[in-house]
Image (cartoon, rainbow, N blue to C red; front, side):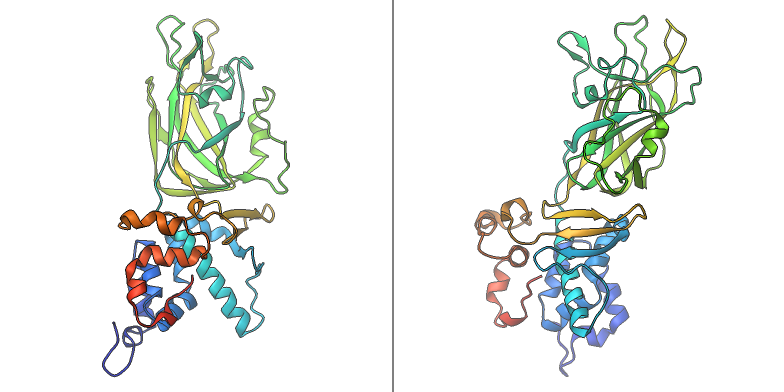
Length: 369
């Protein structure tokens, strides 16, 4: 136990600022949970200084847009402090929400993060060359070419964009893969790639109108698409090769998509079609590598100002759909994941601490996040 001989705690001995600097060097969210389980004092220090929230902000800076957090079962929805008791409840609530959120950020990535195609800035031959074709990895289906094509342009600098809905309103994205289309049925087998790509993530403007997508609308222009969305993340530009392969573009840092909308900007044209002398951009396939946050999390969009509320439903869900089993639990993993009679927060503690939690003689200071 990190307790000094005179009874002063290690955190008291180091001092407030130095303790925060040391604890914020932790990279694994499970380590912060272990810290909060050492003693009542340590948990109080973690909670009062919002260390779990700071860890989330360090991992995903886009979370700074969150105006607050809602815990659905008690509906604490404001950051305004009414009293000391209210302040304590808000700190405890934020600790629970962000500690579980940070733990979920350590889960594995996958490539199937696109739910559906929404719209393209232009489409040459609709519906044969629709954006829907980019969801299929094959470039030929039933002996027919499968790809999206822009309209032709005389000016090669005119951009295009493709918009997709991701599988959750909160997704962490690390890579986007784009494959240009090679027209095997044209002389010389030209490849209609863009010069560069850029990615933007965000949400529909508030209020979100259901059924309002301009999906596959051949009349939808670039300007009208821009009016539908608010972008909370914009990547750097990546040069694109004029090659018939799935080109992988890794973001500088994992990015949080708040709102579940991804736009692929195709910047510049390189290939002119011989029959009409116009420049086109064609895409065969698109993939998104990332992970949705737990089903327990959602986002509530207040207005176009860019502020959101993080919503956390920490009870009433099947635990196996929420909790990612930490490494090292081995055969015991299934037993604590399947136990539905305990709170999710306690299961996180048990998962991270394992048998150590049972061996500790002072159970009073073991936290429920």
